[in-house]
Amino acid sequence: MNGMKRADVVLMIFLLLLAGFFILRNVQGSQETAATIEIRQGNEEPVYVSLHEDQTIDLSRGEFVNIIRIEKGIVFMEEANCRDQLCVKKGHITHVGDSIVCLPHRIAVTILGEREGEIDVLSQ
Ligand SMILES: [Zn+2]
Image 1 (cartoon, helix red, strand yellow):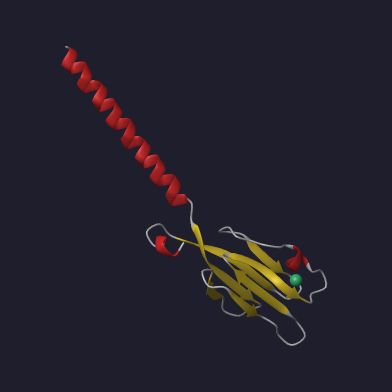
Image 2 (tube, protein in one colour; image 1 turned 30 degrees about the vertical axis):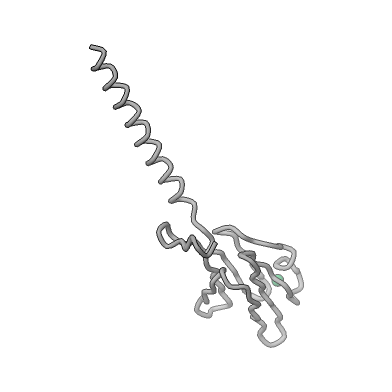
């Protein structure tokens, strides 16, 4: 009888570990890593830019000035001459789903994620 009990305990531990493993996997799978930004401007096709490269993106058109800056995975509107300045005041965005919108100039910048398995661990 004793041996039987031990087997039950082992099975219990095994099942708990298995459940824990699956829960952990699900949690990790739902946490996407910020990877790219999607830039929408007016009716134009969206433009996708990697977040892994520091760069300045000039979206200025005519008298409308909008300059986006990507620095170490952080995105912000460095400069804009829109009347409300909401896009500049928005400050830094870093998480998947976060966005900077410049309504007067019809610009929307959104951070998009990277799916599990595509994450380049070495570069982080
Ligand atoms: Zn603005």
